[in-house]
Length: 157
Image (cartoon, rainbow, N blue to C red; front, top):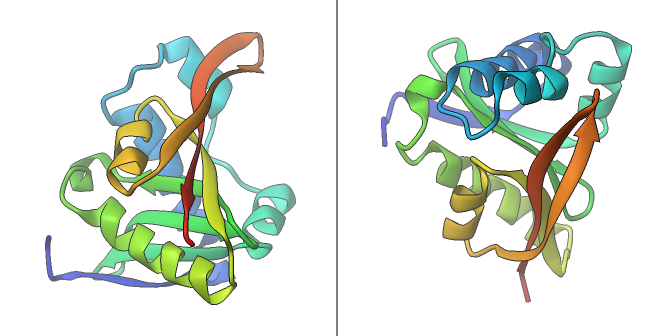
């Protein structure tokens, strides 16, 4: 893993950069979703009050290289991993694991019995590598498109 990448807790001034990372990961990384499905999932870079509010209610860990945000993962208290996105050029380099370690520490500090998430087709293998099991496959509908994902969880106790 690149030692020039540091992990820290995000602040509100980072929310625009986090939105850009999410959009970049969905649109520019290898994907098992069609362009139509990706458009339904994330038609534009998230912004506005709803985006800011959602992030402000979570603990968000971000990875940065210099001043560039290259990935992030969030924990919606006490045990739900809401966001997990890595820029395409930084995927498959151990960054997901580094971010997850911070999220797991926070979950344990909060006395969570488990961590759970809704993992996309691309995120499923990374969560599985962190010890998550599939609870059930799911299909969600967004703007008329059906997207497959997985409810996954990891027991902490």
